[in-house]
Image 1 (spheres, one colour):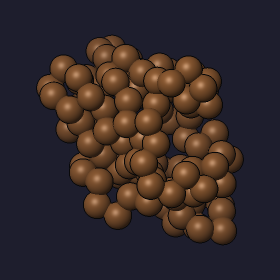
Image 2: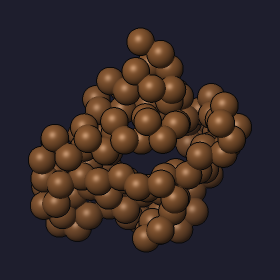
Image 3: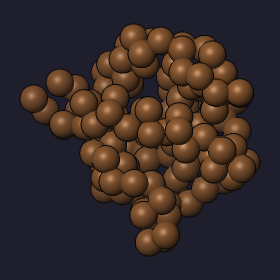
Image 4: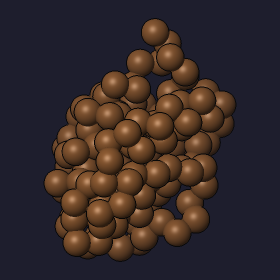
Length: 124
């Protein structure tokens, strides 16, 4: 298993999202993440899911409608299954951009949680 928030981890996440098939929603969610303080430095990536499309992921924030900014420790909590709403309420997440897109995509985010949790282990 690749280190979390590395290029190899991102490749594994992309392969897993593609394997999920299209996730149903009226419009796709284009969600950027900025993970600060990751072992290899700050890590930025974007997930595109929903809208009847296969999921995809890419390095960087191109096209992100909404971006979540969090520390490495908080990002590990998210990919391990801690609800983002709890972390947001605790002030551990910052949200930039179209917050409505994020709020409207709760079902999509719930569908992603198992994929992220499978890839959360820093080393297998």
